[in-house]
Amino acid sequence: MLIHHDPLPWVAPGTTLFAIIGLFVSGPIARALDTRRLVGWLLVVSLALIAFATLVPLYGTFEAGAPGSVGCDLSVLTPVTLGDFVSITDRALNVVLFAPLGFALGLMPRSRRSLVLIAGAAALPFAIEATQGLLPVLHRACESRDVIDNITGLLVGLACGVVAGVVVHRLAGAADASRAGA
Image (tube, rainbow, N blue to C red; front, side, top):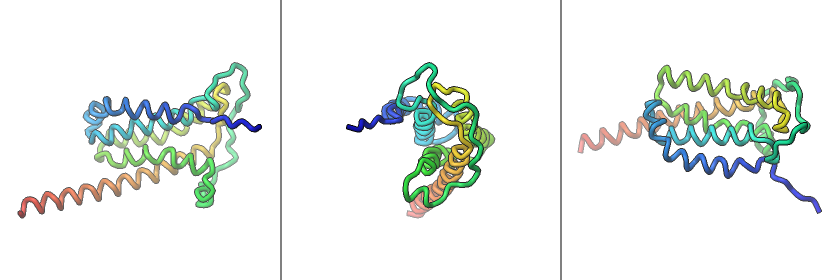
């Protein structure tokens, strides 16, 4: 009988826990970042999801001397394809993983602070892959394609967040004008 082990057992419970914690810390985060509370909450949840999906050991266990990658596979430098999304590959999941973070950052007001956060978010995939490469106990592989896919997800999410922010701003302006004229 084949026993299936969840390779990422901490993703759902960890992200759920931080979704709850985010309810309590989103207000202070939003005030500090001069944004809406929902954006603060989305930042907390998306960062928790990324951390639990990338920096927790596969199969949920740390093992001394566990096999892991040494170095980094830099052989794949091509962008993700639409075919990766049709069959739901690891590449597609890596794109989707970073899209909520990009979306939240795209909703933030344009400022020096938001640019610094976007730069930090763009550096995050590099830091994750370096950590995975340096800590074989995580059972992870450092791969250039993960960085490309994560950055792609960040950019797609960022673009969607900017568009959503513009639409919401215009709808709010139209509603305000309608109330003022009534």
